[in-house]
Amino acid sequence: MGIKDKYFLQREQAVLVVIDVQERLCRAMDDRVLERLAGNIGVLQETARELGIPVVATEQYVKGLGETLPAIREKLAEPALEKMTFSCCGDNAFLDSLKGLNRRQVIVTGMETHVCVLQTVLELLDAGYTVHLVRDAVMSRRKDNWFVGLETATAAGAVVTSTETAMFQLLRVAGTDEFRRLSKLVR
Image (cartoon, rainbow, N blue to C red; front, side):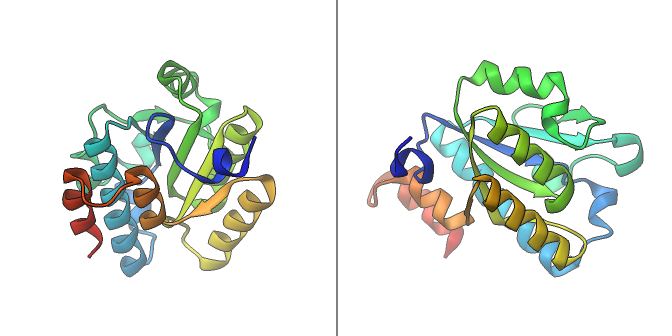
């Protein structure tokens, strides 16, 4: 795999994954960081919608943690997949959904970085996917755990990126109608 294949997102190969951004789990998070996370995931959801990139969302133990945050849930074309395993890859519905999309690049967002996000990233990498972990669209309750998740994912081979980096890689060209509509989201 070449540098460009690993580090450069391509809209025809990408899928956005939103992991466990759930109402009750969000109550345990820093409000300012949560607001930024939700906003960045929203930007990525709008980018995906505009560019025809599929979005797969998950919810961990809905009975205990509640549903996906309304601001994120309302932008989903498909309902979130409920799971009990920490890694999304431990759930057959998630794996079947990914395989059915026939895409090899996974843009990962959600929470918590050091648990469900990290375990998913590791298993996706092991399955041969190229994983782009969006550092400003993942979070943990504690910043040191967020760092651990990012460091471990990086060491394992994930590409750590940002919301704007991912968006502009997927856009590729300025001056288009898509660019004009999406660039407003990050001004």
